[in-house]
Image 1 (cartoon, one colour):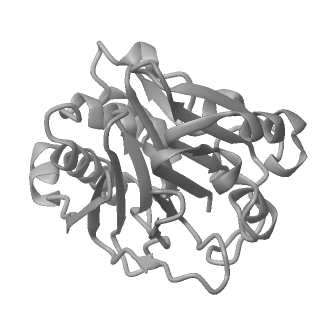
Image 2 (cartoon, helix red, strand yellow; image 1 turned 180 degrees about the horizontal axis):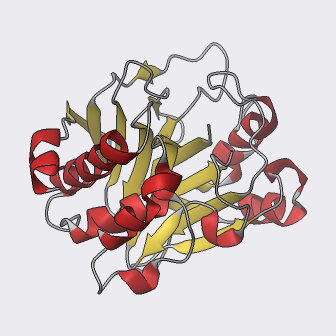
Amino acid sequence: MCRWAAYIGQPIFLEDIISRPGHSLVRQSHEAVQCKSAINADGFGLAWYGDHAEPGLFRDILPAWSDPNLASLTRQVRSRLFLAHVRASTGTATSRNNCHPFAVGRWSFMHNGQIGGYDRFRRDAEMMIPDALYPHRRGATDSEALFLIALGEGLDQDSKGALERATARMEALSRRKGDAPHFRMTAAFSDGERLYAVRYASDDQAPTLYHRWSDTRGGRAIVSEPLEAGESWDAVPPGSFCTFHGDQVTIASFTPDLSLALAAE
């Protein structure tokens, strides 16, 4: 599975999360602990917010630990809100278009997990993307499809409900045409003002998710794995939808309604 990290708060250098900590995201890319795949070498990506409404994007197919451009960029760029991801493919090709985060307008999105049997219902999932959003379909991943479906479900107006409905629709497809595990997910996404994160699975094997506030930085990190040994990190329970804004955290239940999705099939 992939690994990711996100941050919201006072502006910091990207390297303070991505490469400097003892168990940074770059370190996790070749030495992950809390996942099935210790090596995440199928590409990496960054989305960061600055003076413009839409995020900046940097994605490439090299392993995160071997790209000097990534090291240089993270050392020089400060941001108040950013998402970073190292990829372990679950079947689709290693290409820039398949690297997370994905972005449409002011929204950015990244995902870790799997949707069982996606190759067998990929065409059905593509049909769920509204025509107006389909030009933003650049790659072939289930993650990007989930993002675009959620946008179509009203991510702007109801972030939690839109992702619940998109998740239910994709999980219903997996149950009808795919195989188990039908859905395992942690995801982070942002509109440039708030940072959202979710932990969910159709079984009892939801990928790990943690968050921690730093008084020193004046911000919060949300991560797949803790960035430093010995620090106190709060584990996000399975079936949770988190909203981070300033120093505030709101955690609500995340309960996709499969009955509605299955009835609509």
